[in-house]
Image 1 (tube, one colour):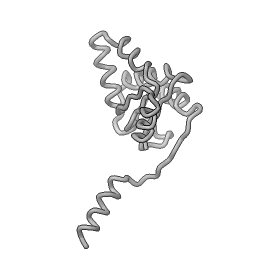
Image 2 (cartoon, one colour):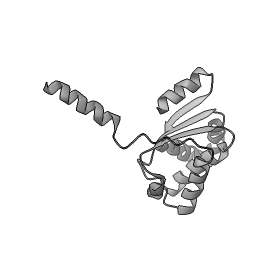
Image 3 (tube, helix red, strand yellow):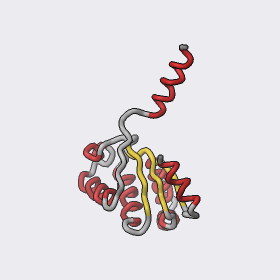
Length: 137
């Protein structure tokens, strides 16, 4: 679904960037160490749509959570952010341990949002099960 949204935006000539949460955080941490954070943050702000996949798979260190918040907060009411997660919002403190930062991030993410729940069963699992069933016949 996320990929489809990104492709549709590209077809509308929108500037789109797809990344994982860990990839985004790693890029920003590395930029900070290279004293390039301002330049990299400015590059992220130029996209019409940022798609952040796999939020919740890997807990974020404090600095990583702060960078994720900064990216989302700077785009609030200016440009689109799409995120995927395997966690309900009530469990996001497992990913972002700072409760205040977590609440502030969720506040910005959910403001004017379209939230789509796709269920708990993995399409990859269904695909594998179907292949195994087919091979068993």
